[in-house]
Length: 125
Image: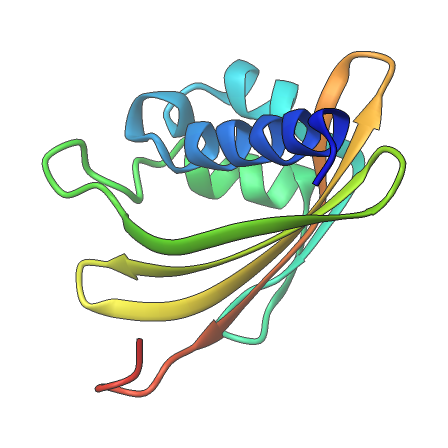
Protein backbone atom coordinates (compact mmCIF):
# COMPACT_ATOMS: atom_id res chain seq x y z
CA UNK A 1 0.00 0.00 0.00
CA UNK A 2 1.34 3.44 -0.86
CA UNK A 3 1.90 6.07 1.80
CA UNK A 4 -1.03 8.06 0.38
CA UNK A 5 -3.31 5.01 0.60
CA UNK A 6 -2.12 4.25 4.14
CA UNK A 7 -2.93 7.83 5.19
CA UNK A 8 -6.38 7.60 3.60
CA UNK A 9 -7.20 4.31 5.34
CA UNK A 10 -5.92 5.65 8.67
CA UNK A 11 -8.02 8.81 8.30
CA UNK A 12 -11.13 6.67 7.72
CA UNK A 13 -10.29 4.42 10.69
CA UNK A 14 -9.76 7.47 12.90
CA UNK A 15 -13.13 8.87 11.80
CA UNK A 16 -14.93 5.58 12.37
CA UNK A 17 -13.47 5.25 15.87
CA UNK A 18 -14.49 8.83 16.64
CA UNK A 19 -18.06 8.01 15.58
CA UNK A 20 -18.04 5.09 18.02
CA UNK A 21 -16.75 7.25 20.90
CA UNK A 22 -19.60 7.86 23.39
CA UNK A 23 -18.49 11.48 23.96
CA UNK A 24 -18.49 12.24 20.24
CA UNK A 25 -21.83 10.48 19.74
CA UNK A 26 -23.37 12.65 22.45
CA UNK A 27 -22.55 15.79 20.43
CA UNK A 28 -24.66 16.33 17.30
CA UNK A 29 -22.13 18.93 16.11
CA UNK A 30 -19.22 16.47 16.32
CA UNK A 31 -21.20 13.68 14.64
CA UNK A 32 -22.33 16.04 11.89
CA UNK A 33 -18.66 16.85 11.13
CA UNK A 34 -18.10 13.15 10.34
CA UNK A 35 -21.26 12.46 8.32
CA UNK A 36 -21.37 13.16 4.61
CA UNK A 37 -24.41 15.33 3.73
CA UNK A 38 -25.64 12.41 1.58
CA UNK A 39 -25.03 9.82 4.34
CA UNK A 40 -27.23 6.72 4.44
CA UNK A 41 -27.11 3.63 6.61
CA UNK A 42 -28.75 0.26 6.51
CA UNK A 43 -28.70 -0.75 10.14
CA UNK A 44 -28.36 -4.24 11.57
CA UNK A 45 -32.10 -4.01 12.27
CA UNK A 46 -32.78 -3.58 8.55
CA UNK A 47 -33.87 0.03 9.03
CA UNK A 48 -32.66 2.67 6.59
CA UNK A 49 -31.25 5.84 8.16
CA UNK A 50 -30.17 9.25 6.90
CA UNK A 51 -27.94 11.84 8.58
CA UNK A 52 -30.77 13.54 10.51
CA UNK A 53 -32.22 10.31 11.91
CA UNK A 54 -28.74 9.13 12.95
CA UNK A 55 -28.13 12.44 14.75
CA UNK A 56 -31.32 11.90 16.75
CA UNK A 57 -30.24 8.41 17.82
CA UNK A 58 -26.62 9.20 18.62
CA UNK A 59 -27.47 12.28 20.68
CA UNK A 60 -29.85 10.14 22.77
CA UNK A 61 -26.86 8.45 24.45
CA UNK A 62 -27.31 4.99 22.94
CA UNK A 63 -23.70 4.06 23.75
CA UNK A 64 -22.99 4.67 27.44
CA UNK A 65 -19.47 5.87 28.30
CA UNK A 66 -19.04 2.99 30.77
CA UNK A 67 -19.77 0.40 28.04
CA UNK A 68 -18.19 1.56 24.78
CA UNK A 69 -18.55 -0.46 21.59
CA UNK A 70 -15.78 -3.07 21.36
CA UNK A 71 -14.20 -3.12 17.90
CA UNK A 72 -12.00 -5.80 16.39
CA UNK A 73 -10.68 -6.89 12.99
CA UNK A 74 -10.89 -3.37 11.53
CA UNK A 75 -9.30 -3.06 8.12
CA UNK A 76 -9.58 -0.76 5.17
CA UNK A 77 -8.84 -0.56 1.48
CA UNK A 78 -8.72 2.37 -0.93
CA UNK A 79 -11.30 1.69 -3.66
CA UNK A 80 -10.45 4.82 -5.66
CA UNK A 81 -8.78 8.13 -4.92
CA UNK A 82 -10.73 9.70 -2.08
CA UNK A 83 -12.84 6.56 -1.33
CA UNK A 84 -12.04 4.12 1.50
CA UNK A 85 -13.96 0.97 2.45
CA UNK A 86 -13.69 -0.14 6.09
CA UNK A 87 -14.89 -3.40 7.59
CA UNK A 88 -14.85 -4.47 11.23
CA UNK A 89 -16.55 -6.49 13.93
CA UNK A 90 -18.41 -4.60 16.66
CA UNK A 91 -19.83 -5.77 19.97
CA UNK A 92 -22.23 -3.28 21.55
CA UNK A 93 -23.16 -4.77 24.93
CA UNK A 94 -23.61 -8.24 23.42
CA UNK A 95 -25.21 -7.08 20.16
CA UNK A 96 -22.60 -8.31 17.73
CA UNK A 97 -22.41 -7.20 14.10
CA UNK A 98 -20.12 -7.04 11.11
CA UNK A 99 -19.91 -3.44 9.99
CA UNK A 100 -18.96 -1.86 6.68
CA UNK A 101 -18.42 1.84 5.95
CA UNK A 102 -17.58 3.85 2.88
CA UNK A 103 -15.65 7.04 3.59
CA UNK A 104 -15.06 9.78 1.05
CA UNK A 105 -12.77 12.76 1.05
CA UNK A 106 -14.68 16.03 0.84
CA UNK A 107 -13.67 19.69 0.90
CA UNK A 108 -13.98 19.56 4.69
CA UNK A 109 -12.16 16.26 5.24
CA UNK A 110 -13.04 12.57 5.44
CA UNK A 111 -16.72 11.82 5.99
CA UNK A 112 -18.69 8.61 6.13
CA UNK A 113 -20.94 8.31 3.09
CA UNK A 114 -22.51 4.88 3.68
CA UNK A 115 -22.63 2.40 6.56
CA UNK A 116 -24.14 -1.06 6.92
CA UNK A 117 -24.39 -3.40 9.87
CA UNK A 118 -25.19 -7.10 9.67
CA UNK A 119 -25.95 -9.01 12.85
CA UNK A 120 -23.47 -11.80 13.53
CA UNK A 121 -24.24 -15.21 14.88
CA UNK A 122 -23.76 -15.86 18.56
CA UNK A 123 -20.38 -17.57 18.13
CA UNK A 124 -19.17 -15.74 15.05
CA UNK A 125 -16.30 -13.32 15.11
